[in-house]
Image (tube, rainbow, N blue to C red):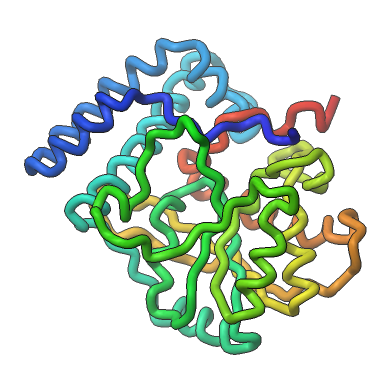
Length: 300
């Protein structure tokens, strides 16, 4: 398998249930406050500091130990607040994603070109609740998503006890979900994918430049977009603060030419996404959450 990441939560079922209880009881502010101490505790674990350092070493290569420790704390604290916002959004619905009129018009225009759209994002900002931002577009909405069997984190709709606003496509089948993605796009769906992690075989990615090194990003999304002539919108959802409206911005939009089956033909397209992501982390350095070594073995 190519991926070195896992979606399994580090927390225990008891603490998840306790969090849900306090939010429902109206003590969400207490939960946010407790994050400052919970994150400090987790930073005592060497594995947390190590997994955070893969990205921070690239983003802030000149840091000393003390500065790196505080950056690690801030990175994980921001992640904790984002997870808390997701829980609050699911349980009591206070957080909102409201795209501007300009962003809506971009999507209408893109979607109308082929009555289908690929939304490409990454594990940064508030990606967990991203698809709730596209309810202004008609048609079915799908998210390519693999759920670890040991993952105890709940989706927003599960927390809220309501039907999911999107449907899920599992990439763990032998075709990486590609056949189902193509079928859904052919019927006019909006499909959201993550562009920053490979899943499955060693042949699922291409090497591109990111933060001064070479990383492997998936290429199948570009091959699908080219084959079906479906536009790609690279979209990010930066976190603005506790309980605030989540920003929504389109970083880039482009069509991909059909270049056949050779994966290296799509390096240029994958690089466009990597450039967008690098711009994002330059502006929001504490909102990128790939806690594994993306650069491992690519530069040795």
